[in-house]
Image (tube, rainbow, N blue to C red; front, side, top):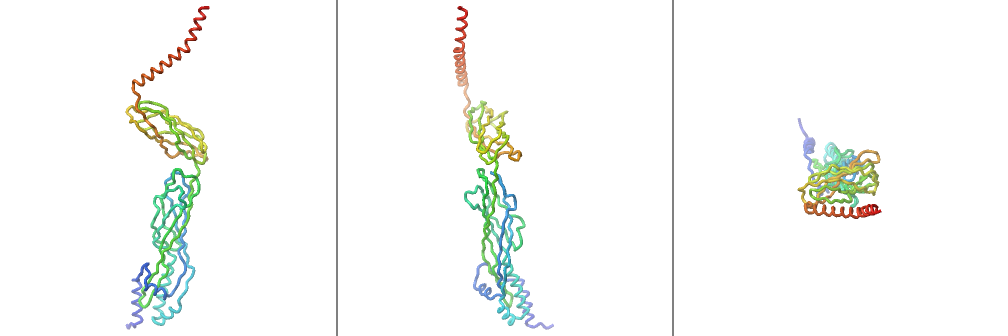
Length: 359
């Protein structure tokens, strides 16, 4: 079997097509020359779109993962053939070889709509947005036109405890690389690529919902080690909705104990406060310092569902134990006061009785 020169050249080319020479993002003179004299100019681009793939309504103080779906809606808008270059190469290298290179280049150029090496960064659009983004940057790989991410991009967030109800915009910035153009050159099918960087920014809204929101706004306590007394805790509803049938609770832990850890507060409207009374016993060996006990408010919302507030800290100061002499002194003072009052009250009665006997 006789293989002519043109057939040999075609076989060598087909083999070499599987070992493509890639010139990376740096655009050197060879790439510029090859692209300038390539077979096709293809027009189009990637077009990334994003939407929140979960409920976008959050509670104050909530830790959550904001799942964002990303789709590439890129489109080819047109192409233009360099007929002169195609005709020149057919004349020099033959129809079969040139048409193979032309087809390969067109196929490569159509990836202009693919977003490669995507990096997504989530940030707040307004510095006053009450949301903390715990992980703001994710690497997402590549996305071809007409495709969505296999799994949503998950950004852990924290809604601040003092967030006001409302709608807040977040900004999703995606940078990626795309293949702007390519060239397949004869006689061996060397392939050159021209890459450029692109950026897209999208806005996504999240909502902090209206609800009751409780704060401990005042604590009155006079507790001594080894003593039992009443503490007064004031709760304020600083939210936007009424909380009905409120019950305040404290969790007494060492050195405190109580058999009176709940207090009914009734309905509390936005901006209103209620004070709960709890009887607390302090251990004899309690260290003199400020402690904190946990507290919460159980309530019913406007849908009549039972809810619980976030945990709150109630600060309690423990003073030194009262000495026996101070107790005796206080008791003696109390007795003197009582006797004095009895004397004041009793004297007129005695005088009246004596006066009656004289008559």
